[in-house]
Length: 85
Image 1 (cartoon, helix red, strand yellow):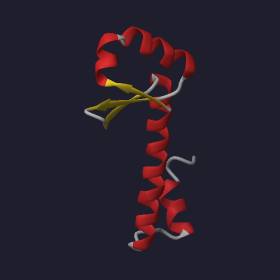
Image 2: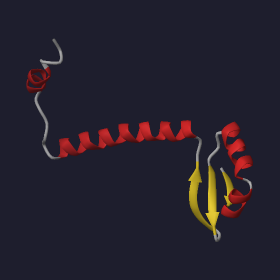
Image 3: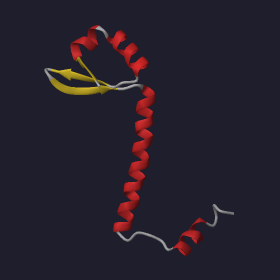
Image 4: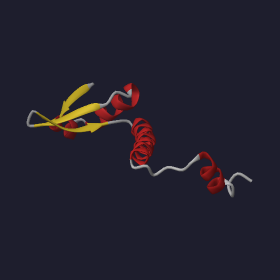
């Protein structure tokens, strides 16, 4: 992963964006020597968002199981019957 100073980003944004688009490698932006933000390609960001939605769904399912908020196979079939016709 590349690291760039925020001042470099301000001065050379076009170059940094061009390199980001060609390499697809995220860029860590630092301010005062500390990590401040990540600059990522739009496609990579969208991919990460989709993956996060899937993981959140899995986490909700796991929590439902822990809470006992589940249906039997027969109950699920009955509830889904209107979509399975």
